[in-house]
Image (cartoon, rainbow, N blue to C red):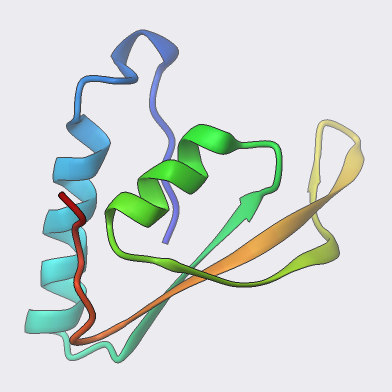
Length: 89
């Protein structure tokens, strides 16, 4: 699972709402057992969103996982298993 949002739309709750809806569909409708998100360590807003949605940090850094902007980036692995709390208050 991944997300992108324009900077001017950040902080308004749109991604939390969209993430909740997507997780409900994946788990409740499609029967997906586990959802994962790979997030660059320095991307604090995305890590915070993952945690709000109920993801747990499972590992990392996974070295040189993504190529972007002409260089390799390492990521942290977040996971959410069906039945776990999906949104923290």
